[in-house]
Length: 210
Image 1 (spheres, one colour):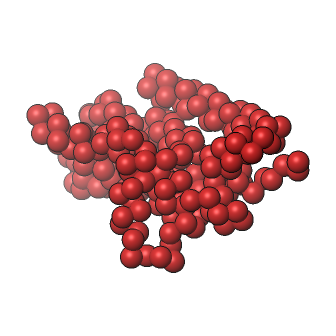
Image 2: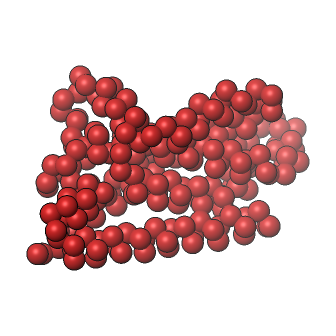
Image 3: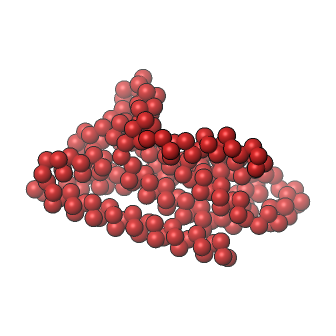
């Protein structure tokens, strides 16, 4: 049986777009949470972590309900991008908040003393200082989006040639007895994720120690 590369390339495209589109919202949420007093971060932290703690199928059901009136979007790859963002944004926010809270505040205070606004301090001071951990957070979000199953399956479905995501395609191949193509794609994805995680692991300590 010939190996169909479409689900792999589609999943890589969905993961890359979901990560890129999640960056602004994830960083903004991280900055807002990092600015709050420690005693006030409980509810915000819980809400940010909730999409990561809920079963993916539950998130997929909520996403499907939100798209109920958007028939043109359901069971398409853009719907898969939106679904992947549901978990990519919280993961980015939580990881980025930890990075921002670990910065030396003297640089930020110095910038504020020179008249810089809060957002200007974030973009010109905090963000460059935390670029290593933030890049690692983006890498983890990409890996999470690539490995998502429940959410994307609920909203993108399994439509060959259109919404055929990698996770669903692998399951379909395994159930139909096409073991060899499934193993090849699974190994390639595993190698890609290992490389991403290794890169993330190298970025975090380098920035923290620097």
